[in-house]
Length: 249
Ligand SMILES: Cc1cc2nc3c(=O)[nH]c(=O)nc-3n(C[C@H](O)[C@H](O)[C@H](O)COP(=O)(O)OP(=O)(O)OC[C@H]3O[C@@H](n4cnc5c(N)ncnc54)[C@H](O)[C@@H]3O)c2cc1C
Image (cartoon, rainbow, N blue to C red; front, side):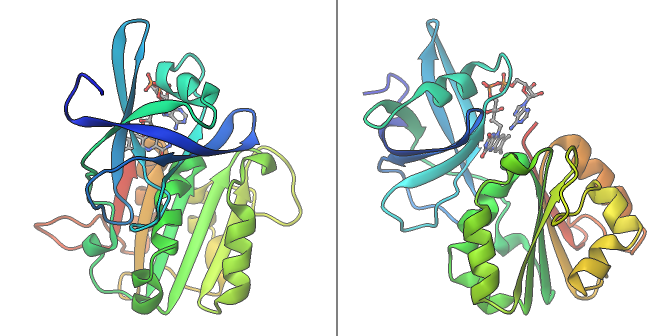
């Protein structure tokens, strides 16, 4: 039993290594119901310190196990601990999920753009595995930007979704290798120079576009600036806009 009563014990039921520093874990634990797009905390005692960090849930609500998508951060205590876990090991899981990076916060719009860098893809996997998104939007576009092609986790699942749903497009972006089948420039560039609109055949505009951004603070800041050129602004409770975001670091 975790000493901190906000946590419960979870057991690793599956581990998928996309490569040695990029992996997904399935965790069996009983936490309160959550909404697709939310995060919970994982924790462990590392060198006698209770170390907890936030992680987006990649599985859909109602699935038997929680799934998470991680990268190993250099010298990061918890991500390195998680990377060493194997099936059967345990990890503390916060009983309550939290956060507002959910479709409930996306007001109106026909086209949903889900833009992520790295493991920022996780909440979109949860949303795409849930029914709601497919009923609400006439176009759903995932743009996943990574450094190297090997970092394109969940690629097969996303390609399959694109084959199955006419309304869905998956746009991989690889910035540090030359790959013929992917875009190669960062979000602000492919938005400002029209590459993204040309590639998808879909305009970015405040009337029909709704944007979710997930990843580093720099990416969110720079992409928000680029979207502003098209009149697309941050959604605030006090002033409705088109962008909601989740900052990982
Ligand atoms: C709401 C929320 C949801 C999150 N969801 C996820 C998730 O689903 N998957 C995930 O891998 N991480 C996620 N993170 C980041 C996560 O909480 C940890 O910060 C990360 O795993 C590193 O933990 P650490 O203890 O190893 O290092 P820390 O001591 O937490 O971080 C060390 C440094 O690493 C950098 N850093 C943090 N996270 C990352 C990252 N993902 N990629 C590159 N550099 C990073 C930062 O500069 C930070 O200062 C999320 C963060 C937040 C706030």
